[in-house]
Every structure is written in C-alpha cells, then in structure tokens.
Length: 230
Image (cartoon, rainbow, N blue to C red; front, top):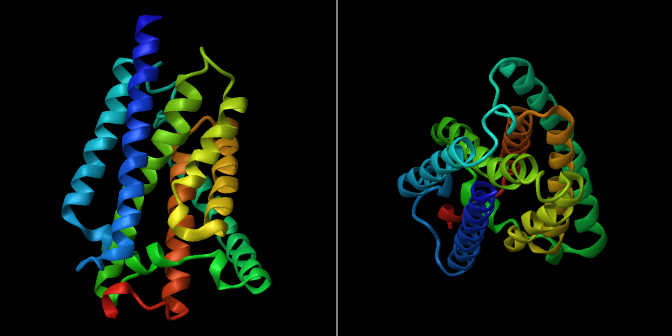
C-alpha cells in the first residue's frame, strides 16, 4: 500500500508540474514570439524526453509494471497501425466540427496561437515537426491515460477517473480558446476509452500523433501563417 500511495503522489506531482509548465508556456506565448518552432526547441525536447523517462521509471519501479500499463511490445505494429488509422479517421471529423463551430459562434471561440507556433515555415522543417510530435503525444498519453487509468485501479475505477482526467486535459489547452478546451476534453474522453478498450499505450499514442500531424498539415496547406513569419 505504501508503494501505491507513493506512486499516486508522484504521479500527482508530475501532473501538476506538467500543467504548470503548460500554463506558463501559454502565457509566455501571448507576450513573446519564439525565434524557433516550439516543437524543434532543443531544451523543450530534452525536458520532454526526461519527463518521459521519469514516467517509465515511475510505472516500472512503483507502478503495476509495463504490461499492466499497456506498454507491451508483443503486438506493437498492430497497435500502432490501429492508432494511426483511428487518428486519420478522427482528424477530418474534428476539423469539420471546428469549422462549423467557428462559423456558428465566430473566430473568438478558437485561438490558433499554439498551432501557429508549431506550423513549419518551410518544407525543411517538416521532418523535424513530424518526429517531435511523437514524444509530445507520448508524454501526454503516459500522464493522462496510461499511468493514471491503469496505475490507480486500486483507488478508483478507470471509467470514473477518465472524466476528471479529460477535463484537466482540456483545461490545459486553454490557450486554444473555449472551443479548444471543449474539443480536447472530448478528445481526452475518447482516447481514455480507446486505451481502456485496447489496453495498449501505443494505440492511443499513435492515434494522438496522427491526429496532430494531420491538423498541422491541414493548417499548413490552408496557408496558416506561422508566428515567426510576422
């Protein structure tokens, strides 16, 4: 029981820290234009990889273990392929919903500031952005899906926990405006259900990654102007 409580406490600290860093980044982004693509920032990527390592260490040494947390590689290609397919199917649905909401309620319901900070300014940045989106998705899925939903079953049913987790996940996207909060909250619920259904971290990671990659690609094709271009 002591180990389980320590796991829960450290996971809470990790969530709070990630949330505070995300909120601070959003505030800074409103006052300061980063000189580089946010996804290609070396310090940000090193910090992200460090936090991912902490998550894996937490799950292995204090949590229920890799298999229970959905980290098994036995069916990695199958799970990853399913995730990519889900992400590709989900992306146009969210895009259509966003477009309809903006037309109905106006541009003020959605803020594309974060998207403009990560859209490539040229084709040369595309590979780096595509690669960097993967650890970004992995970190969020570890913190908001795998570790809490599979690691806290001794404390609360994951089908109950998924609701407040999705709300927190949505609120962390406050920089995207009311529509961004609502949309990512529902996305969090969907990804939580997908994780509980498949039992695989890799399915939700690659669904998240494919969805984000399509969103960035669509924004670039639509001519969304990167912040650094101003």
